[in-house]
Length: 223
Length: 225
Image 1 (cartoon, one colour):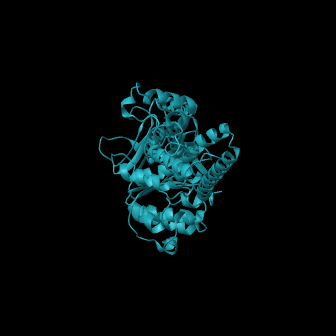
Image 2: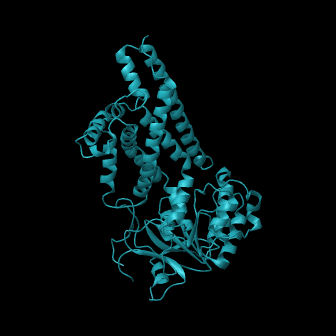
């Protein structure tokens, strides 16, 4: 082959860093929002919950397109010069996993009503109550982090459209696979695809084990 | 109290109808009743954990949250060591009878149900909460005697709502009410040990005199009697 490809590990590490940053941003905002909605009772709650659920259903290419329109030179955010940068992918992926993280933490709070009641009964308020709740739910929270990260790193539409698949700069595992396959570099595509699969299997297995352990422990003696 | 008004929860399903209950400090009030009659609901409402649609709940004239310790029927505890939990809810003032001293350093979640409920009884005693709801304390605990003696200890410093099926625990109470079809009835035994149930006696215990009660109480319905 005449053309020297960027090493797989570079693509892998870049993808990892981009998706991890996106997940961290989404988690630090989405999880508190989910907690807040889950803990409060208000009239518009079902509306907000269905909006969050609806947001999850938007196809990633449509998201990518919308972000492209925002970030393109004459778009409303064009002056930031973010199009075809890793930052643009991070923003896009963060917006992608944000509703996932908030719905997951929302349902987590609602599923664990017993813990909330216990904390209220003890008389913990405000900050103390929140940190105790987070402490109690830390294991399933970590599991939902893994789920969100898996979603971010496997996403293609956003990375391709706003990232631009620039070698050595914005090329991620999924955009690399898309490109190599269309170039006929099936070998390379399969290798990248398998490593992505392994990573996802590992993360999802880890998430399920954590969740199963958490809920099994709670039930252990009460059956 | 007008008819047709009551404490409601869950989409208009009425569980408690016009229930009024006042529990003074240093007294034990027992509530008995068939499964599903709303005993546990009453306990949750009295502790301020479930909000009644109508009526009000208060402890010493304030919000009962943080003033009423609930020894939950399911033995739920926080993911802390027993010692940390007891320190969180109050002080460590152990009742040797409950045997909690043996498990102080263990994780609450690793304990058996019986041990968890013993930890709850201990916490009910040593917590800073002036009132206590004991929801079927006898279930899961191997020694009824330990439960009885703990209730006697609790009576000396707290106001206790005792939810139970156990006749020998009922006898410890200063008053016994039966919850049936969402209503409280006065429950007594006659000289031959037969059940005597009288209707509508409970309101007299909860007449509002405008002063702050040294007690915790729930009154459902809109108007005060």
